[in-house]
Amino acid sequence: MTFKSVPITCYFIDTDMPDMDISTPIDVVLSPAFYWIKHVKLPVKTLREARRLVPALFEESLTQGNYSYYVERYEDEYLAFAYDEHAILQALQAKGIESTMVRRTYFAQHVFANAKTPFKINETFVLSVQNGIVLRLPSHLIDEAQPLQIPNDLGRLPSIKLSSLARFGDTKRLRVVMALIATIIVLYGIEWGLVFKQNIQIERATASLFEAYDLKPTMLQNRAMLDTLEKLYATQTHIRLGIDAALNLPLTGNEKLTMLDLKTGVLKVKVQPVTSKRMPVMTNHFKKSGVKVQSKQEGKGLLLEVML
Amino acid sequence: MRSLQSRYIIVFFGALLMVVVWNLHRASVHQLQLQEEYLHTKAVAERLQALKEGWSSTSQERANLQRTIKKVLNNSEGVDVIQNGGRLNVSATRIDAKSVERLLNKVLNQGVEITQLHLERINDTSASLKLEIAL
Image (cartoon, rainbow over all chains, first blue to last red; front, side, top):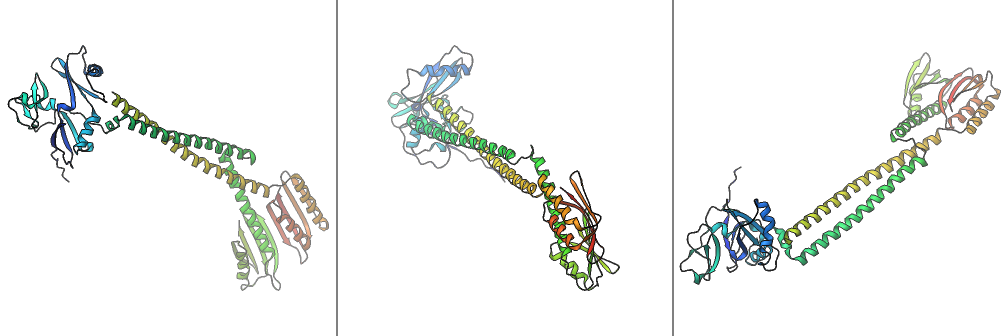
């Protein structure tokens, strides 16, 4: 089996662009219209500390929305980004791009930071790099702009992941979902409580069986006792069947039951005299009574042995 | 920031839901085991009770049986009835056929354990007897 890497198409996304029909995964480059950027000097040493401060940097400059933030080092200073995932996803959807189709999302800042010349987004806007920052400017401010061309190798550039959870940025919708999940949790919790209670009742009922039937403390002892009694019952039933069969033997002529002997494990029955023709009749009589028997000829008599 | 919090809340609720569902599943499985254990214990208990009732006798019943055996063997010769601990040994050098039948009927229909029996024909009307039963 061979695996081929499918080339991913990359699209530049701007607020002012025609609708698209996307059916395969794509990468997107976000126009500066979708994010806010600040080039700042922060009194911190690590990116982690910088990330904590970033929301405060944008506090007064952003419009209302649910913002996510991205920060990176830029020489000795920092570049901070703020973007509204929900707004971006809505804009993508409005243009015919499902969020599930978007693989990687780049900021235009990373893709075009090194561009030597301005790029034309459409008839009214251009991308231009001013003091290292990629800006979206009205085209009448720039004299010459080349057609927009996205570089081929974007793989190493930083990208952001548009989370499908951002769809829940809509607080009302989020509340409905939360309420639904909370209701399910409560229902399951109640069910759990009921099952727990029932389990305790069953355990109590099992314990009460030990008292009611005067059982031994462990089931091992009880099973052993049951086995012993079952064996005794089976043996004694067999003894009674054997004795009953012996006492009701179909004797004819001179045939007499001369001995009945029960000792450990065997019941012996002796009949005298018995002809060889009559022997099977005697044996069959025991078999019909549900007793297994072995027969032996002893002199003129017949010895029947019932194994218990 | 709010979006981030929303994610955490969703993840928290999701985790909570999973914990509750998992515990419910465990409790349900445990309940099935408990029900099975209850039914098994009940079946063992009922069977044990039935067998104990069938194969044990009260002191009154034991005395009655002993009295009946002595009564049946009244006309027999060389009669010996000895109770040794939980066992009753009965022997007779000569017992008539009718008494043998009555004795065996009584013993076989009683919930007692017959441990030994030796019955040997002497002539057409009598036999010798040795019987041991556990009471």
